[in-house]
Amino acid sequence: MTTALGRVRDRIATLLPGRDDLAQMRRDPRRDLLAGLTVAIVALPLALGFGVSSGLGAQAGLATAVVAGALAAVFGGSNLQVSGPTGAMTVVLVPIVGQYGASGVLTVGLMAGVMLVGLAALRAGKYMQYVPAPVVEGFTLGIACVIGLQQVPSALGVPKPEGDRVLVVTWRALEEFAKAPNWTAVGFALAVAAVMLLGARRRPTVPFSILAVIAATAVAQLAQLDEAKPIGDLPSGLPVPSLSFLDLGSLGTLLAPAVAVAALAALESLLSASVADGMTVGQQHDPDRELFGQGIANIAAPLFGGVPATGAIARTAVNVRTGASSRLAALTHAAVLAVIVFAAAPLVSKIPLAALSGVLLATAIRMVEVGSLRAMAKATRSDALILVLTGVATLALDLVYAVIIGLVVAGALALRAVAKQARFDQVPLDRGDHTAEEHALLAEHIVAYRIDGPLFFAAAHRFLLELTEVADVRVVILRMSRISTMDATGALVLKDAVEKLKRRGILVLASGIRPSQVQVLDSVGALALLRHEGREYASTPEAIRGARDHLEVSGVLAGGPAQPPPATSEEAVR
Image 1: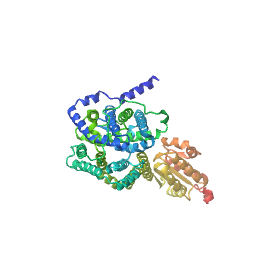
Image 2: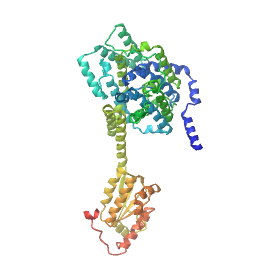
Image 3: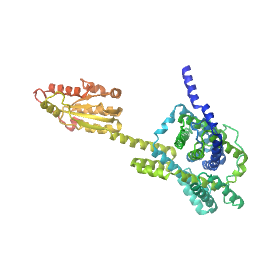
Image 4: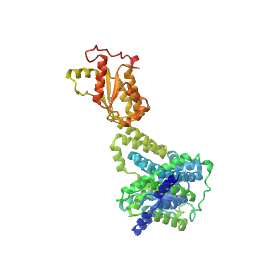
């Protein structure tokens, strides 16, 4: 018991912040403070926009950016990661809000945070590397499309129609706009998006998003444009932390959405941390600690009315490009947003919703890496298929189903490719010390097969067909030393083939069975069948001698009368 508690204590200690984190924050605080300020300017309209898009309001987005952003920076596994509300998470939250309301979303976020802490304790972070690149690219493409479509109602200046399917909501919004066009809202959305996209090409370091939003807000106020609906009143500060939203009776109902949110938070956060590592030299995130940090952040954010958070790829990239070197930058970003919440809430409340829609439209467009998509589509047909399926599933279904479909298809195609590597070749007999005449006689009655590669469920059926079609022989030798892996299906098929050949009067000998194959063969009864009457041999020459002895006993060798093989009628084969 004491040992187990010690292990738990040591494991928790590895996930907590250490002295190295504090030392890194002291190395170049000026650059980190400047980077954090820049990220905060970029993050403000995104936090507001994603809060509005989620259905919980702009204040929820700000609360998440402040609380989750600070805690994830302290407890996370990346020195450069910036966390907060994201478009991918918003896509998942919209149907949850529609079905369970705001309290359901807060409960889901809390449950997901606990799950993420559990995943960190189980060291699950390393499994991120098994997600194929086409799944990630298709997932990102689908998210970009959904985020863009989600902005259509606000960009058109119409109330958001009922429904949780983004395609349906978009179509209904277009119908409403056709009845009463709001060109002011459209103009704000397109202008903000255009300024961001064109400005980023010429001056990538300038935060055009906040400049465009400020300009749009100023125009709307000075011109008194009633058609440009503002965000609305915001609280001047964070609410007092509370668990009043928690309904213990609904936990079972919310389990599935919580799993979806936790899975997305883990996937997007680890992906974002990996992107940050790739943009720098010498930085390497700890995936388990990153899950732990995201878990702590998602446990705390709902207490302040915030939506679930993840690592944000765009904000993390800005953080890296502006020279951040430690967690101080992400902490500064959260602190600046907190100051804005407390000091500038009345000004922020006047931002037109259409302007925020323009920010998110530009963000969605910038998420699509055309070069990466083109390269992935040209790589192989399998990669192109996985990319398209994942993207379409993200748009038509939801993100979790999309990832599952992508992983299943990728796994099936990978298994197919591995199964093709399995070979069942008929090989000539070793001459050994036999005379040419005797060797020729042996070759007439013995066939040897060498099995190369994996013998598992994806390749076993082909093996059964090839092996049971052998004819006009008395002995079959299976050379098994080159089997790389074998599962229960492969062992069962092997047993079935041996039994079918036995019913036709053909003896099956096996050589070179590896120790790793013994357990699986024994578990299905194939090993006992092969070993019966000495049918298993350590090497192929020994198996050939065993076959020779069998042929001598049956009279095929040593001048005895050759017995014709049993009938091979359909009934006998069965």
